[in-house]
Length: 311
Image (tube, rainbow, N blue to C red; front, side, top):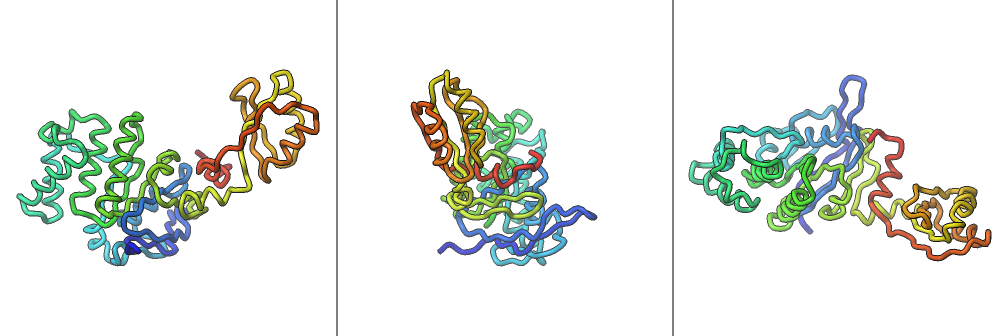
């Protein structure tokens, strides 16, 4: 079994009377991609800032590659970070930027240059190595930021909203990089994002936060199964019967009718399975042309757990 690279135990942070992170505990291993999820204000960025030693915890502790949080300087040598709003010196080239950071981590000039060239190749920026960063697109800057986070060959990499503001092609590029970092390097990646499909694509485990607390932790399958009794589906009836079907469904306990997708299709959710909903429609004499139950989705579980939070 891969070794433990990151462990948090009852990690907490208060700002005056406000609790930003409340007793967060989890464990991560080599090659694992953890999706850190939650609505705005859930505590995701504060958690990353504590784990990356930018903020000192108010309570609890953590360790990186066995190094305790009481030794922040040693932890910084073992992690890489791409913050949500990373700044870049416009006058430097991508190569100069990475060489500079390699030197900061104690690499010799030749080591820093070789590392920079290698990383630029891995993130697809070899042809722009000598271009000033001011000429880079947002997607290129994000890839450069990931390369910078890997300069010191870290055990754990923290990526805070790395695909924010990117087009679909740029998002795919970043997610491919994330997968490669974990699989090829064996690095643990903590990915904070608002985009749930990203988590389903690349994350091996999920940590859902809300109001600073952990609501769920585990694989995507584990987390979606926590909402297994709540199902969503699509019921197709003759167009002339849609209004009557909605009226019938509205009287079934635990069933909600969602917004219309098609004139003859009714999207519904049910907290205790779909049998009661389907039976009610049939008993009312309404012809059922088709009925499809959706597969369990992370978005369903996420919305159910965080319902009522600010998004």
